[in-house]
Image (cartoon, one colour):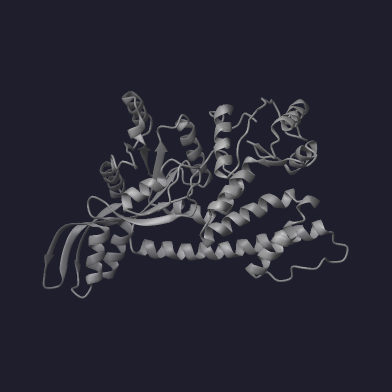
Length: 417
């Protein structure tokens, strides 16, 4: 259903086409679609009475068992709509659909925890008597997760109240576990920062080709498929730039228009990788008919997590599929700091790495230092993380002149003082 919002660049047809692709990714066969233009939503059912009846009549014809809305529904709207179908149709919204896809694609402990937290926070306000089967699910999950005290009803407590209490307890437990994950990741990032290894975070709309690009740059074997959110768990690989500097490339979760707020909040641990990166590599699918809308959605999400001002290189991907040279010229003009590439064919990757190296150079400082002969580890780190312009042997040690990331240069100066 179409509403005027910050994603107004999307036509209703394009947004519904994306919703259908999400449904197919979740394993749902799409048998039809419809929409209604609204000046304001109907509080009870989101859409008007006539449209509800039209859908009921359509159900008699197509016999569908799931109805998916392209907007987020309130708990009341979801209940009212399902009652209109005599509970023969399950009504989902875009948020529930994306959460289901994330649940299918989360394979690491971190990813599974984040998805489970987002699902329970979404379900809690929607809990009714029809959800009492969750009591067994939550109880089982709680038992595996180590939550105690979940079981019998208290005096005067209804089953619905028990279910809500159990979910709140599970949410609290998941948040504690995720905080431990965040602490572990924070320590890892601090160790990485001490080593002075720059980090480039790949960001972009889902299915733009981030995983394919990471594979091409690093020789990794990250799972790739032509579907939305094919990869969910973050992957980090070492890549050597043309000048010899080693950089960590981190592939993060793909973005999408109307990204559920529950996911943005739950995936804070993963998105911190983007916040802590030295540079963002924005992968753009230039062949998509909604390329400008997708770029706007990515920028909106980056602004939401507070990294909109971070340095960025735009990798204009899939240029091998473009038939109009003028279209590419316009895209390059529209997106500053952009490099046309084909991650699949390997075209333009040398130029892309050179551009990344040049932008990282802005955080490099000149260093002239003598390293004692017994600190071969510092010499190796200089070669790995910096650029050696001149090296000679003296009575005091190895004299190196070159460039290093600012943080590493300051640390090296202290260690050799």
